[in-house]
Amino acid sequence: MQRRKFLKTTTAMAAALAAQGNLPLLAARKRKKGYSGPQNCFTEPCAIEPITGHLPTFSPAAAGRMRGAFTARYALVICGGSAQKSRNGTSGSLDVSFAKGQCRTLETREGQARTPGNTVKTTVQVAGELSTASKWTLESSVGERKDLGFVEKGEWDGKTMTVQSSAWKQQHLTTHPLIARWALLPLLASGRLKKKPLTFDMLDDSTLRANQTLSYEGEIEVPVKGGTVKLDSYAQTGKGIVPTHYLVDDQGRVQLITMTTVNWALTGV
Image 1 (cartoon, rainbow, N blue to C red):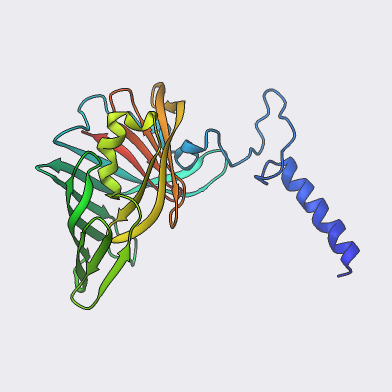
Image 2: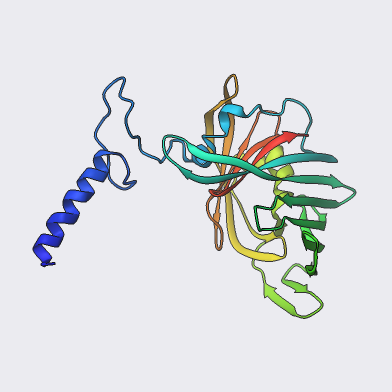
């Protein structure tokens, strides 16, 4: 194809896609009142874009606290794409508990057709006002396949993170406090991050996600079952992760966590 013809063709295609609202970097034409045709698949605010198909069935937890000793359960909400709303379904659960200086999690992901389910258990020793990790254990199992299961153990001395299994050992230097992903819940519940962003290194299961920033974005209105609620939105960005949003109610309960394809919705505290 000649270069001029190629440019002419692709420009026409781009214009057509933009008019339908399917190019996120190009503005679509303003919709007329009552228009019910194709919409831009990118939703505002972006914090809820991956779960717009789930929100009409979501009822925020109305009791319990996420400070001190507590337990919480989340549903795993998957996102399989989006049109006017995200295509969502649930595919597992997560139990989180804090007690006696430990953060424990049990994550269960359901199997699909020929794919067996997966279970991951973690126990993290936490300490200090930031609940930094000192020692942890991870146990992973895949259905009935005992040959696919493994155990990893780790520790952090304030400067170096060490992780090992029966077959290997790794060490990573850290430059910030090391905080396990789910140990962020009580920090978010405290409201302290409204005043100052948190810079940290994240322990994601047994993986280091370095140079993370968690900051307050403001209050947003979220449509849920039976109406709308106002939630505080916090955004986490950093090395090795997709942007993650935490939506917190006025009692400090982290109601929703959105991460694009994998998201979490609180079902009880």
